[in-house]
Picture 1: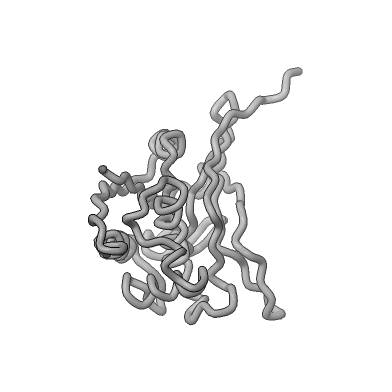
Picture 2: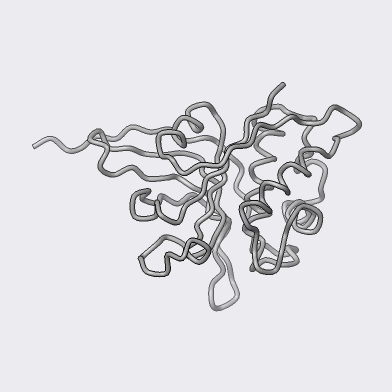
Length: 203
């Protein structure tokens, strides 16, 4: 019997942690942390230096706080519309007097499209939200959370595709935290509550 082989792709994206010291509203900072990681990837990983990046801030926490305060952070979390507005307003901020970014932003929930974005070297913001979608029943990876999709793994028979995401860290009951790290999440069981946001920079 031959084991199912896998294929996939994974991007090299710097992880962010919403729980690290200095983040002013950590419990609701998953959206700004995802937004920070996404824009930092375009700034450093793709060389779009006209986009403000981590080098403009004293720390990742300061980067997250700036996005939270000025680009859509809310105590109850970021909606999809809020994330898009925040992304657009942040990208409209000139870096050192250079030109403004021109993003093409799209919203979808489609696995082949997600894989196409990753294969094109573009990470994808992913929101899990069972509350707004009235999907209260089900065993999902997250009830309400933003993560950054950075890759995928797919079985040869297409039966077990997983999303590779950066989870923005985890806070433990004793007050400690685990930094942001990769997590592999099956797509199919979570499909009903997922929204994906892709961003293409037009030069």
